[in-house]
Image 1 (cartoon, helix red, strand yellow):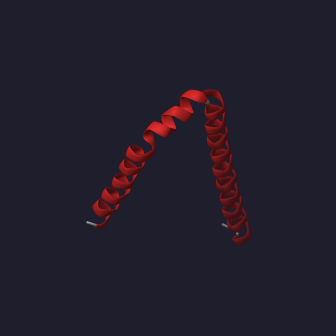
Image 2: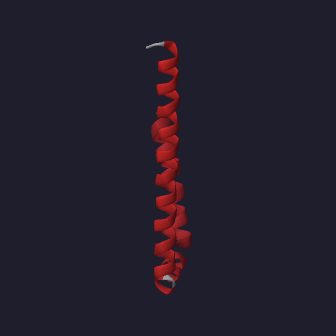
Length: 71
């Protein structure tokens, strides 16, 4: 039940934002298409790099913990 309520709230909020700011976002995207696209790609690449770094650190900590205990 909580999961359903959470989804309803989230998607209702997204629908509100789309209805309220949708035309403005489309206008900006049409005027500044390439810079916005490059920014979005850069943000996605930074998020992927951060995720890989975090996962690598977790993996290294787990590996060093296992070798210290002799497992």
